[in-house]
Length: 250
Ligand SMILES: [Zn+2]
Image 1: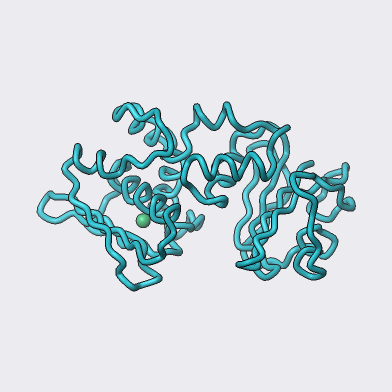
Image 2 (image 1 turned 180 degrees about the vertical axis):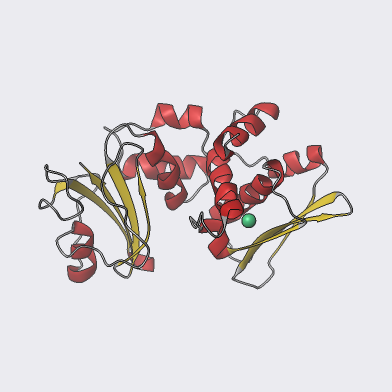
């Protein structure tokens, strides 16, 4: 069973159909998991699942004060539990909660996939997202309704697009993560790569350019990949944290 199938099974088992999915206390109670939420004053530590003498305990660090992140951490810890990851102790750092490092942290990646699929159920996302409406209005609307971050929303919803799309999250002009739609054949981008100089995203960082909202703009051939047709790019700036979400469509 994939993490996504497992998440769908849990949603079905607990008859969860309403949104946002804030059913963590209910699920813990029904499964006999003891849990606590506390501002632990340790920015690196997000949450933990412990198994002690056959009993499960989940600890959530609420110190970040960001409800969407705390909600994702709760779903991530439930992921370790329902995916039956072997081990007595999972102590998950803030890096683990966002990791895509499948080679070194397979359980953490699986728990993240579970969390995204649990908080943004497939049947609902398929109705909300399409190639034609994939813009900031749609993405931010889902993030707000489902109490998840913009980043989680993009990572989850891009998997339902039929065309060739790639999303990139960059901070200070440097790629933090990139993800492709299932049919995208363009090259993978990696953490640490600088944004391409001809991209709209780069223009936003370098020239303080403010892109039009919800509009895919044509960029020169070869800017973001090797496709024969020039791509279009939608850029959403997050000025306060000097971050950018760039979505390229071929
Ligand atoms: Zn974890």
